[in-house]
Image (cartoon, rainbow, N blue to C red; front, side, top):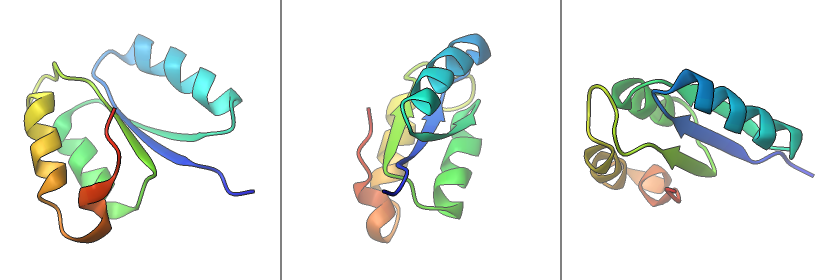
Length: 82
């Protein structure tokens, strides 16, 4: 069974750690990025199965991050975003 790869883009480190721990215990591999720019860079570095995206980020609004994800080339543009 393969592990699902999740990318969490969340600036609240405490919340990200709590949710990330729960998801890891549930069998997911979680990568956490604290802002939109690093999240977008991580998404382009390796494929993920799901992006968990905060709307209120310190650098780029979460909706803009989502727009930029949808503008990426290939399969990355079709990753589910929660």
